Length: 610
Image 1 (spheres, rainbow, N blue to C red):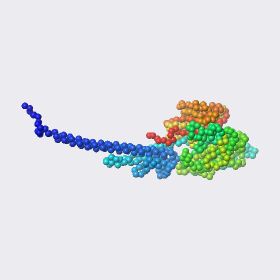
Image 2: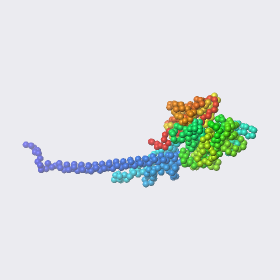
Image 3: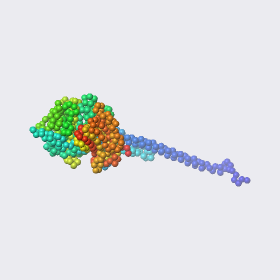
Image 4: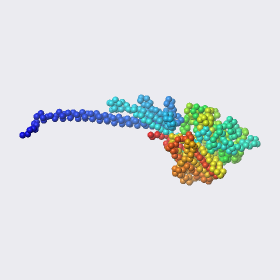
């Protein structure tokens, strides 16, 4: 007999599990409801986070656009937090943010500042922008979260063409004015004295000014500033002023139409020199030494010469206010021009080896006036006597434009320069009321992105050198590449010539390695077609020979391009000024005219990726 018989239906024991099962079903319902709530919360979170992420991208794009827009006004026109109209870095940055949907107010904040203002030792060419804006939520409002702040920052850099040729208040001073001759009555005096700045004894158009030594002492730099005439051939060393590849024959290309490795005609963009007045300075004046054409020998004066017949040569000098955007010519306002003073001059100095070629007129120094531009042969000419320059509260950059092509809006007579085939050399000087040598208040004069130089070095069996400032490279370009382009270097026959690039250091300058390549850039029949093979991509080069002394230079009618690595640890010593050392050897005088450009490789305006 079983001690525990099975339960029968209806017995109390058979229904004892029902409450447990009902309880389990209730728990599942609670868990399900809670899961739905949690799942809904996660979905809401995903939707809101996705919406936030999408809007933060819009904020980032607005910050990027604002930084790029503001950078192009730097370093000259940053604006201030309180004063930032359009045309200033801050003003253009805020305007671009507005165009992308963000205006300060209603929870939106936008900060835009020049990097050097907010960071000690920062980059004055960099714009820093931060945009902060509220992003509305959808489902997160259930939890009391109405908005989430999205904040994004951006930095953009404007890589300007680097200043070239001079950190001083003068540019293009070869040094000694050789064989300058002055005849007074029957007495002829010849001197080779160091060029000094304009002095009190040498006002405009006074005879014998070449020998005035009462002005500022100038350091010799081994070259004259120069420009070829509109009718010259570009194979003579000027890449941008001559209208021709071959004189009166094949025209040169127009710049911007046929690639970069050519000589091309652009008398508006070239040649320009910055004249930078320090803050709160007044009484600024710009002078040109020997601004008129007067033919001499290469070893005399500034070495003006004809390459063809004695046809009148015209030179124009224009001074502009750049509104502190020296590389944007469109907003410049002209202050003064030399006008017709130096037009159509066919001068030749018979006392300085210029001879008396047919069609020329005498332009030697004498004690009576010519009453025209020839009065400034071997003399200083003040370009802006009635328009003194000022520095304003933040400093001001002015632009001196030199050209042999008739400038727009200039009244002139018959000045068809396409028939003139020559070269005009000169020097530039600037001063002001507050500046003296060494006090940091003098103006600075430098090439804006390009420069042309005439280097009439002489040698007598032993090497002779010219060491001159090349380009100013601030320390924030460390790790990048400085690219130098030289048009038609090496016309130094009968001298050999070797070129070195020198890096500034804490104790001076030292030769630095580079790679180089060359390409023909003209159709002129005297070009050296073999220059394309004169390349060396070895990183160990610290020199390049530009002439063997032969009549045909190694890079005649060619662009020589040097890529110079800027060391990662570069500190911008010597105020960032690099140098060129030009060494020549043999017997004779060089006639080398070379056009130089310099740039830091990379997009001119670009974002800085963290």
